[in-house]
Image: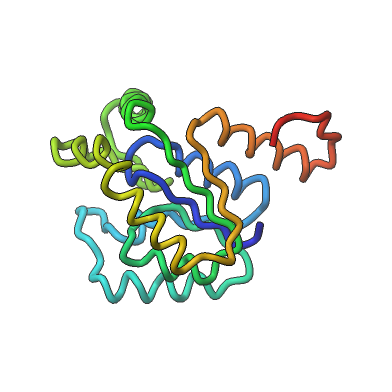
Length: 181
């Protein structure tokens, strides 16, 4: 795993930022949170062409982790990735993650790791309908632009945590002791 795209229900508390941060630390790979590229400090989005150009530049590196959905530019990352981690958690798990994050940051916003806390009714509807509306689109993009990638799909945080634990053990050269992968 040298070029890793981490995707899932956007901004949703699915755990993308956490998984990305842990893998970047363990594997010593540069991490980019797409939210920090896309929005400035005033929540103004970057023009689409500029956002795509920045990603085109990022994926030329030998090693990277890029966390975030942004389906219109996902083909850029898929074409260059060797691994895609898809956090496909149920809406209830994502909503729990949002509440936990809101409590952790006391309702504020945390830009350093790409975490944004803008909860609106539209955002909640997006999370509740993600698996019905966005997941099929993501699956099509994966099929069309990423047939060469190693796709790792998680439907729970517990399974994602197992990957982190396994990766930590593998890089520290500790015996695996038969734990699930």
